[in-house]
Image (tube, rainbow, N blue to C red; front, side, top):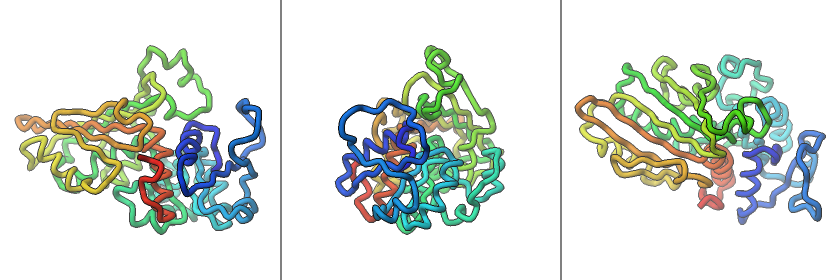
Length: 328
């Protein structure tokens, strides 16, 4: 794997280290060391991130927890060398270069791979993932939002014309390890702030997977002073249901065989502590039949189901391993 120094990369190293079928190789894709390294023998081999390394080592999969521009540069050569690629950036999630340019504000430099990429949300895309060479691991916010919304939208119980509001809160590691003024300790501690209002680059993933129009969804991301975790509170008006149990029944039908989805009894809600350092998505429902107001609470670990955990889940599927190995 490349990009092993970031938060998602470090989480990948931790998960893959306990995987019984994995021999981990760290691939250097930049010249400078930017973090002190412990003395003594290295735990893992470090090799150049090149096609020659992929071929010589016979690497089956390369993970790219790298910035989108690095993923677009590396993915074509790694695929050409025979490895499957699981990309954790947004480089290959949006389907078209036009969609990417609109939301990421820059041109896509490997557009020929966009149609090839399988979107890596196993609960809805498992059949494509198993045969894919390039897997676009979903963003953390869209993972929780799509797992909460898509079953209800498919069942036709959301009053779409009334709009859907997704109030999403994330720990600071979701912003990555690169220092910035907005994510520095003095800015985050004892604070609570919003960002990227109406233009968050994760919005198109929600629209694409859940088949929503942009005007039907209001999404706001907010930064909370914890290291990891996402809690999304999603509001909408429902129809053709009489109780929270009716909504829960839809989830139970959809997710009865899904190992990474946990459902709460009506009126109960998950929290971030419940999912910290796991690959679970927890869902809770509430409904007021008098006003038709429904609230879904979705919780994930942004570094687990929102990034590294889901990437390993995708690797397990792509290589034919049991889906939950090293994740439960």
